[in-house]
Amino acid sequence: MAAIVELAASIDGVPTVEETDAMLDELRRLPRDAATLELIDGLLEIRALLGACEPCVDTHAK
Image 1 (cartoon, rainbow, N blue to C red):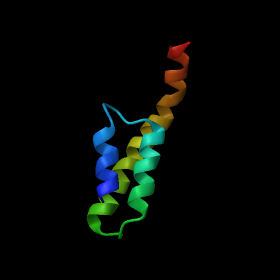
Image 2 (image 1 turned 60 degrees about the horizontal axis):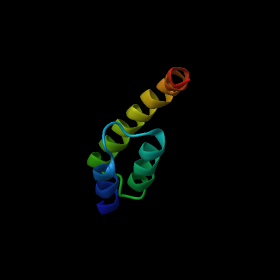
Image 3 (image 1 turned 90 degrees about the vertical axis):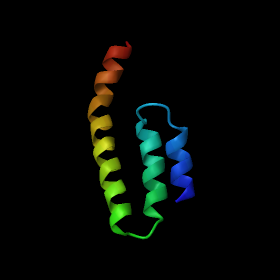
């Protein structure tokens, strides 16, 4: 659990897809209790929103 806390603490603002994936990788290694599943669900929701917005970000960056 310490690795996920360090990852989350190092993020300034909204996480990137890559940062979200790194946190999900760490959570997948933990026992599947209710708290871990809730964190995974939340990160998957954030990742879905980030993935849906990536084309928007690319368009505005040009």
